[in-house]
Amino acid sequence: MKPLLSLVVPCFNEEETIPIFYREICSVEPKLDARIEFCFVDDGSRDRTLNILKELRKTDPRVHYISFSRNFGKEAALLAGLEMAGGDFVATMDVDLQDPPSLLPEMLSYVTDPEDPYDCVATKRSTRAGEPPIRSFFSRRFYQLINRMSDTEIMDGARDYRLMCRKMVDAIIADKEYNRFSKGIFSWVGFRTKWLSYENVERSAGQTKWSFFKLFGYAVDGILAYSTLPLTLASYAGIVLCLIALIFLVIIVVRALLFGDPVAGWPSLASIVIFIGGMELLSQGIIGLYISKIYLETKKRQNYIIKEQE
Image (cartoon, rainbow, N blue to C red):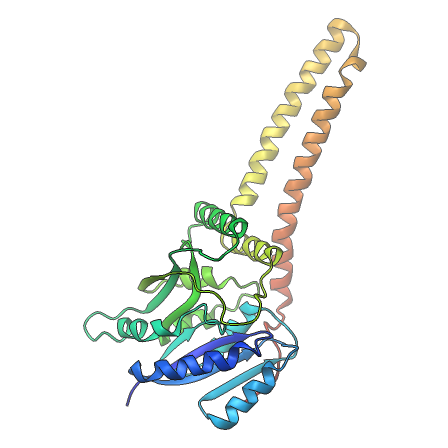
């Protein structure tokens, strides 16, 4: 019997793209040496996403879906989909066709190669054509920054589109952290990975749900999840600023003893106080971000809540 390939597909307000995605997968299916199942995750959509999934389920028993009680975010949706998937192999992909289904046959061939199988086939964009220049600039800077700060390598341009063996999926599911950053988790669990590059693809329909500020917040989460370097830098900055403050204190005292006019130096003194105060607040803010993540982890909240599924 052919192996089962589970397709994990998070959806948030994707009523326009789901039918297109389903037809595209069906057109690619004959080229796959595997049976397929659809694992859709409705992440608290406010449009007809859930209704469309129910309609697909009625016509195709291979379609399964989970619907959240509210929007929990893509990370929670990916985790739910992986936990729902029962395939020998599992592929995670976006429903907007920015992750080309046409790559699935090649991806599957690498993990099913009888002589030298890979554990995972991951994808990355070779170009960012069609993406706003400012977004591309900050994306590249993010990957450069996090790879310098973290021991967990994250490929520049990496997508969540990947096909994994069962062992790797089980390892990812076993990671029960609340503040999830899938790109980091995929890399952290290890396993032998083959990378495929493809040119950037525009959405098939609808609008992206990722604004600049959401992407910025996601980037901050990734840095906090896989690097403690900001804490180290904050500590070093505190030491350096203490030394600078001590030096200026000596200068001010000596000048007061020699010239008897300490008031004349108030602008420089005020600048020093403001500078040091700002650095202290920055350091406390960095520490506060880490504490907030610890706080959320210790609460042991559920990553998601299922309203209905089939």
